Image (cartoon, rainbow, N blue to C red; front, side, top):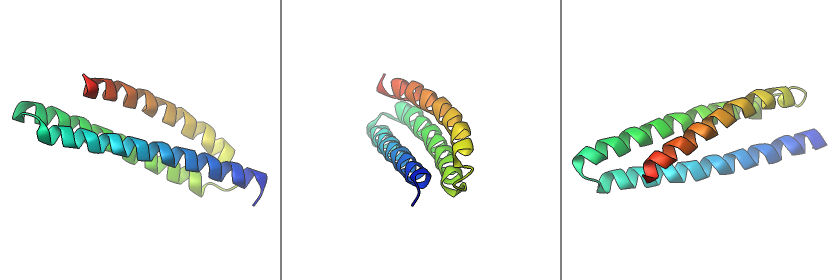
Length: 100
């Protein structure tokens, strides 16, 4: 493996770890929804569905990054990081609502 390929693999591994953490948060959200009263349950399920959609989008972007050639991955990474940053912000806002 080249240095660039090692860097790419390490980066992807870090992003996958973040996705696993977020997946665990969605699972907690769904569990809280099941324990909530009927009116709150709808809110929690809607929030969990939105977070699931965001996770799916992030997974798609990460797959694009993973499949990029060694020469192109840094360019793809720049676009990925912009998308990832927006998603991280949205995730943080959603989690604040979840914890409220």
